[in-house]
Amino acid sequence: IVHRDLKPENIFLHEHFDGRVIVKLLDFGISKMTGDGLGNIAEAGLTRTGAVLGTPLYMPPEQATGNTALIGPASDLWALGLIAYRLLTGEIYWKSHTMAELLVEIMSKPIDPPSTRHPRATTDFDAWFLQACDRDPAQRFASIWDMVKALARCLNVGPPPDETNVPRMLFPG
Image 1 (tube, rainbow, N blue to C red):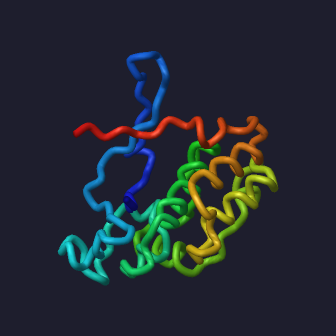
Image 2 (image 1 turned 135 degrees about the vertical axis):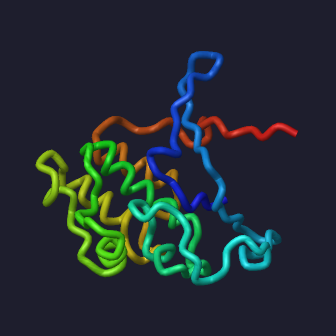
């Protein structure tokens, strides 16, 4: 599932009954199913090519142009890069004041390293962010797991738990 509308407002921390804090993603209203045998989004009648859905502040270029064929897991990685920037700096990455300016900035203006915008951003975080928010989806991280490990390294917070020990979401029924 590609969420297509990841933003801080759709990410919640929840204390599990055993005391663990878990992250919950909400609002799958414009999500897209991917994978073999699932068909494509046009066949499902949910989104037509050219339709622009989502929150522009966290929207990748392929989504901003309405190119549904290019929207995939890497689209959500772009949004997570911008969310991480906001969480770590307290600021929105983009400088635009209007929707038109924002879309131009997303699609064509240079993506500056965070250290040019925030004094405490490191060059390691710059590299991480620039890969997360590369305009070419193929140049973004290969997976969310690779993205998390790289962020932990650049923030020097220690390695995340081994992927085999990460709890998986269980779906009832």
